[in-house]
Amino acid sequence: MVKNHSRKIKKRGGSKYHIGGKYYDDREDIPHNIVKNSLPIFGEDVKPSITVEPNPNKIVDPIPPSTDAVESKPTESSELQFQFTRHVLSCNNLKEGKWYSGGKDFEPGATVYGIFETIKYAQESEQAPNFDFDHVHVSNLYRTWITAVLLYGTNLSTDRLNLYISPYLKEFHETYLGQPLKRGNFPKEIKHMANKFLKFLEELHNYCIEYKGDVDELYSQRDRTNWYENLPKEIILHLPPGKQNQSNQIKYEKLESEPYKITSFCKVEDTAGPSSGADFTQTGDLQKFMEWYNSESNYFGSHDENNKVHIVTHSHIMRDYLSIFKVTIQKPGQAPQASISFDIDAIDNPELKKIRNSNSWHFITTQKKVSKQGTYANIGKAVDDFKLVKGVPIDKKEAKNIEDKNKDQSLCGTDGSVKPVAEICSRGGRKTRKRNIRRTKKHSKRRNNKSRKHHK
Image (cartoon, rainbow, N blue to C red; front, side, top):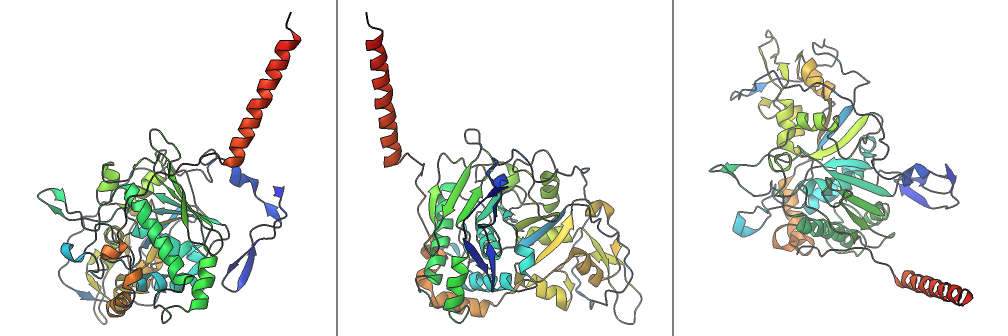
């Protein structure tokens, strides 16, 4: 460790955290992926052994007390855990996209309601510990990037948030005649999306610092200002490594209350865009993601805190994963019925409805849970075992009202459109050029003196 005499303080809620002033962790200066944070876990390739069949009949089952017996095996504490979180309420969820495409944007942003309700959700005392890590895996659809900033941005003790665009996390998309329908769930070129992400960051500044927009009813001006000032000064978007640029990063930086700017977009290769491989263009699979993460194919390396990996992804593939598992349904006063798929859409249960009808709901699982599964004794046991937690309630009426009040700052439709970003490469400044000139003159003078000294 190296002593650092800086006294910079970062606030989080009502507390203060020194991010300098005592010790500076020089391990941060180690180049990325030279040393992994932890060793990956190599597990067997496990395929679900249960075929999920559609369940047209709604079955009502209240969640019983958690004291009932569990037939499924408990999770081993030593096994790496994965926390999957659904994205923020998007423009397409409200059909606020472009009118000529039926209210669907190609790459939808976040609604104003969704942005500020998600910010408040992440500050809740019971939720903040779930979103306090500075390494987050996201899909190649930028509403997950937005969500990661809103959930994790001010719960960090560091001034850098790393977002890793990872495979097998893309949302389900429909097809027509064998071709994908590119309406909201298909990636767009990174030159376009890098600028669209910047627009989101700029609109955050407008709402929180420039006093634009009518959102006081959602979040007070003082709270918005305090929240924005505590966002990390640097957000790095990591793409899979390319052939020419192994780092393949896009950097966004801000100073205190200033807006974010793109400070590095140089020779970026679009390794997760529309022309990339099937792991980025086909519907994602959470089991495959976990297997990839724990394998040697993980080009980002291992990033976990307290044995937990953080991921922001999409509802459909999260529900598909849960549907692999079985749960026993029992009506009050009746014998247990046959086990069915743990499909939170098909089971008519009040608590599951609250989870399904929310954004940023999340659960925790492990790679080997599929191979060790039994049948859960009841829905309550399944909810407890997955630590399945509801997110921000979806209030479409209120969300539509807020969106209409803030059309000028909307990220939806034509208001959210941008042009592709131009390449930004760091170059030597004036001081660097002067220093190089001085070195050149000094070298020339020394060479000339030597020539005269040895001249005969």
